Amino acid sequence: MRSLIPALLALSACTTAPEPQAAVDGPLSVVDRRMVDALGREVLLRGINARVRGLFDVTFDDGRQELETIPVFTGEDCAFLSTQLGLNALRLPVNWSAVEPVRGEYDQGYLDAITTLVDACAQAHVWVLVDLHQDAFSKEVGEDGAPLWAILPPPTPDQLLEGPLDDLGRRRMSGVVLSAFESLWNDTDGLVGAYADMAAHLASAIEGHEGTAGIELMNEPVIFSSPERLDDFHARVGEAVAAAAPSLPIFFEPNSIRNLVDVAPVNTPVPFGNAVYAPHVYTDVFEDGWASEDELAVHTSVAAARDEANQHHAALFVGEFGADPSSERGNHYTRTALDAYDEVVAAWSYWVYEEQSQGSWGLYDPPTDGSARGALRGPVSEVLARPYPRAVDGHIASIAWDAETKRLTVGLSGAGEGLHQISRPLRTWPDAVQATCDGEAAEVSDRGAWIDVACAGKTLMVEPG
Image (cartoon, rainbow, N blue to C red; front, side, top):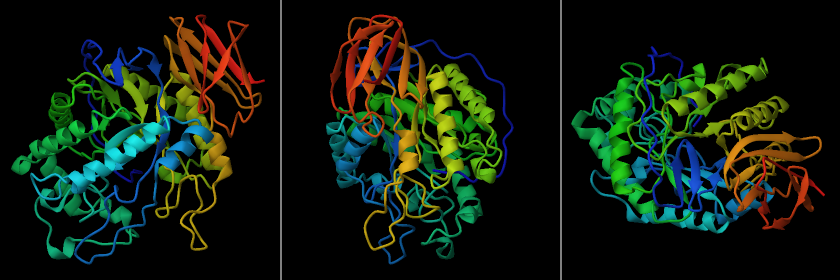
């Protein structure tokens, strides 16, 4: 989630990335820094984050007030993302506190609730990335994440908190939160091993579901000294996940300080294959709401993320980005970010689908009349309803979107005779579209959320027609 970390880390030089590993069996896998499906097509994930009531754990069973209101999200919302916005991915935050509330005991009901939503979104042709989310370490002393038993040293009764989250900045930098992170990175009382076991158990539960895009090891890890400990954490947890669920892509983030400094030098490339580098891009958003409107800074951050992913020999997926969607500046930021992602052919997930607290970002206004959901915000929805290649038989060499003509141009490399999938958001292309392959008319098959079109050439163009 959005980070407010006010300190910087010493950053070290990078080393050489490992050699690419062979593809693994499964719905999605990573081959030579690209995500591919079972047909060998390059897949581009583009979607949204959604904190889901019943899955995002911010409630207590001891009488304390819940931290914030978490909206309902169902398969119908995934269908809206797919058909209206043309998106094919959901980043789903879940929490260690709910997976393993008691050490060594996993909540099967919670795991079933996760896979139920994964299956529902698969019916809408939306992949789900299951994200082990934390902010300020734990709901008990901060915002969300770890169970009470994993907070070391154990918090005193007066350190246990409740809602509302009107002191979020203080929580994120409190002594108890920072000490808990230090205990985790230092593997106090075997915490890293416990986390690795939990992540492996979760991975094995979601692996067999065809809508699963992967598992993310930890949202926005916070570390201020000895950053190599984060490398050790990723290696240990990632290898446990790979052993438990060998076909599952593993998403991992750099130190969350990247949210502020826009770069994360690679000290040690991850030792596991099937890897997806998943940084967040919030260039100047937290500092002053992107008052400068410096588009070059956003492009520079995204280009650096692509380079960092290459050093890890990983695919690139920007797990979070965004700005205040109720302002034109915020939507300008989002448009600029989408341009930057097209420039480096990056996958992404916008923050957030709906939010009724913390500034109320998202695609919907906060409810004001007692309804469950406010009105849809048209401007940000139109920004996100941007066509792109969902899957191509070959490689995606380039992406160019012309908002004036509503024309998408996809550069292809090594294209075969198979069909390419091009997203077809109804908010942008409500009527028929036409396609050309190297300037010649190409047949289009309408599949609802996307179109199928064959093109064995180098340039595929789709536009209203």
